[in-house]
Amino acid sequence: MTGAAGDPDPSGGERSPLGGGVDWALAAKTGARLVRPGPAMTPYTRAAATEELAAAARFAEQPVREVTGLADGLPVPAAMVVDRAGWIDAAAASMGQLTAGLDGQGSRDGSPGIGGRVAGVQAGAVLAFLSTAILGQYDPFTGEHGTLLLVTPNVIAVERSLKVAPKDFRLWVCLHEVTHRVQFSSAPWLADYMKSAVDLLGEDTGEPLANMAGRLAAELNRRRRGEVEPGDGGLIGLVSAAQAEPQRNAIERLLMLGTLLEGHADHVMDAVGPAVVPTVTQIRSAFDARRRRTPSPLQRIMRALLGMDAKLAQYVRGKAFVDAVVGQVGMEQFNAVWTGPETLPRRAEIDEPARWVTRVLG
Image 1 (cartoon, rainbow, N blue to C red):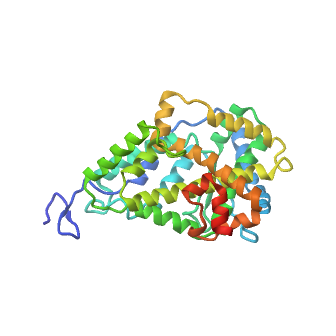
Image 2 (tube, one colour):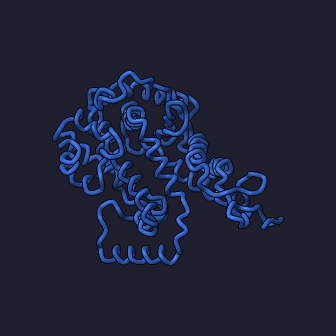
Image 3 (tube, rainbow, N blue to C red):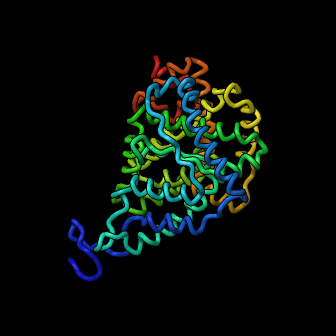
């Protein structure tokens, strides 16, 4: 059936112009309009910090490669040092590429449709919020060698808040983000692994809503009884519980991978040591205290909705896993983790690293 209300879909039904994917171009514009500019600084301070961050990203590559034993001989692309609006624009472009084909069809003329524009405004508001917290980010899905982003106003805001040496803090941040680039450069399969999990999350299972609601109710009861494993709290755990099994597996894959990547990056930041970052102990102590700081009620709500508390748990659990395995078998044998999907740590192994060592290394 066809008509003015919509275009036909492959099943013979009608596609509504209200549907469609997220309008990521509108999301970028909305986010840039809503975002706060960041801490006050002179043009000289901004330019000097931008130049120093770019240089720190280049410098960080060598100690990261030495500590990890990864990416030897691979190119060292320049970092993109941006303001908050620049991060929003890059993030929206990346999300558009990552989710291409997953959001349904657009309107008759190929645009996202009214629903896509509404979703774009909502996504833009989320990006505006996130852009105030991101210090840096490695995006494996854009550019020939991925894109390393560093957000100048956020780095300056945090270093001022922590009262740490700016030069050391900027290098410390770069060590973390460069480690992510080294991870993906050394294991090119990681990007496809992530993309396949995202693709699976976007599939329509056709499952009755009542089934999903039943699983969600059961999970809420588990949480009321305190039967929730570490790192499973917040909205991410609830979303996972409501999904069909293939989607739950995809969320599990992404969570376990994120825990490994973030924990490994935190381990490398500290392993580089005071020879490269003289005040690393002070920075780590101040930064961890900042992570533990109790947020305001609004921040708590936003953190729960965006899964930020789960991400903080990833740093802690992931670093403990990497610290334990490297301490037991050394970095060279630990690097077996980057062999393929089958060597990634499983849920139980994150908190019991010896089980991963036994399974993977024998």
